Length: 158
Length: 265
Image 1 (cartoon, one colour):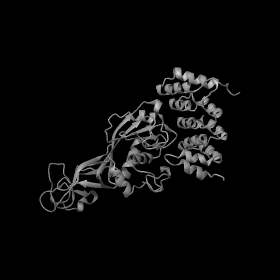
Image 2 (tube, each protein chain N blue to C red):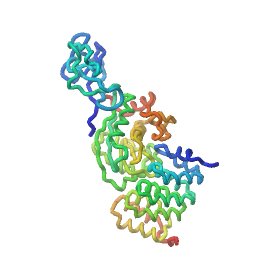
Image 3 (cartoon, one colour):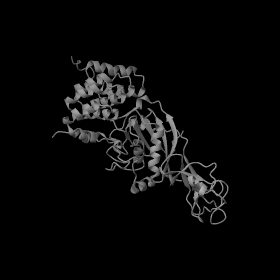
Image 4 (cartoon, rainbow over the protein chains, first blue to last red):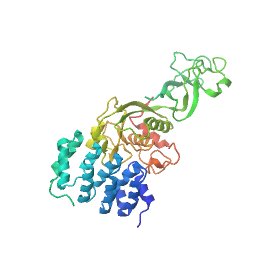
């Protein structure tokens, strides 16, 4: 059954959306989420970017890749959080964009989206953060990610 | 800090049943004869300058009573002549009988100014006779917690990042609430009121609405979501509040008054 824009908006409007339930809207919600990501409301755009990832469908990847280039660090952070729920290769692409973001909160959240077997380029970025990240809380997450990932097991996509 | 607040020590006179200011070393003049008597009265605090209720109520410097300022010229003061309102503040009715103390700790300033969110919360809470004290304001430099992981945002279940954030409690008393203004939460919420026992706290994000702050403090005081967009605790998003200011209802007042964070004045 088709999902309406109003239905998608209704699950995102609460102060604390139930994303687990919202994800049940499935891929039919993605066109509406893309419009919200492109829209003028940064609060709605953040929630939409996250939910797109949370739905976990490969078709969500372009929405998150677009949101990852937002000027608003809150939207980029939400994108990084949503990427964690994408298939590994797509999560990797978003994480590659955001692990060296200017904002430490975005970097920290992107690190949490790094899949278990990151490609060499992403593994190298994690290693740089583990060694040189100026913000201790982010450096700590980088160390945890480096510990749990195999690192360098795959080559970057062409 | 805000230029508003409450003034305590207003009492009901047991003889004339009027409200009078008992903090001026005089019992004033009671219409029933002699001075006012505060026996049996609660200690009422009147909101000044802003907040819910009717403004322009004034203290009379002769009888110590409270009268409606615009009608002072037609009044009869028990001390003789008209009420004299020189030196009085601008008081608002209704009366608040209890108080919640909230501290603001900003990692990122919210888009809706702190003065607005405190004013809005005060306006709504005054309708259930609870005053809000803006206890302190502090800027925190914690870049690593500016996007804070709040997990599922379930009361009693907090993440290590929430615990780290809520450990920053300068000036916060054991019955006070600390609200942390952050860039964003992970996952993205407008706010989250989940906090560890004994550290009453909430987070509010930069893009939250003008009512999110009051809504999250409502959760801290024990309130749950409702399916009614006329009410503060709507679970449909405070951006959809249809008839501002939003309502608190009697059972919610009971819950809030029962919270140890709501202190009788």
